[in-house]
Amino acid sequence: MLFLLLRWMITRRQALATPGLVGAMFLTGYGGFRMVCELFKADEYPGVLSKYFLTPGMAYSLPMLLVGLLAIGWVRRKAETQ
Image 1: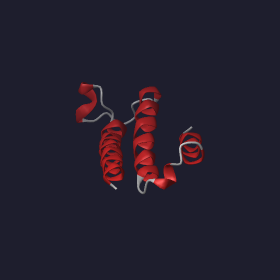
Image 2: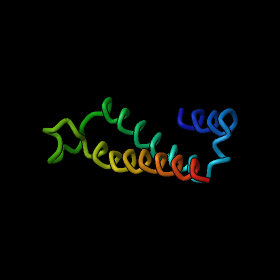
Image 3: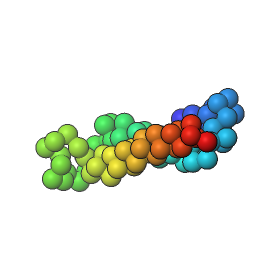
Image 4: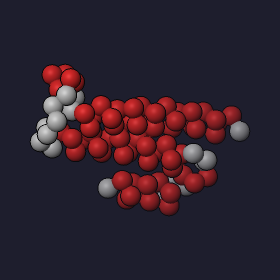
């Protein structure tokens, strides 16, 4: 799914014209898809965050998702000023 989304962004939306956008979208997509997959995975290693509905995989993916979203915003703002 992530490959198809990135391919669509590159071919139809000309994402390669904006430097850094494809990498930021990959981080956001990977983090988001991994968090969704963690919802359906059996909790093999319950951690400290398990009582807050976060598996360790979700906790690892959350920074990727946030950094990706921040990078998309930064790249778009930078592209608008040029």
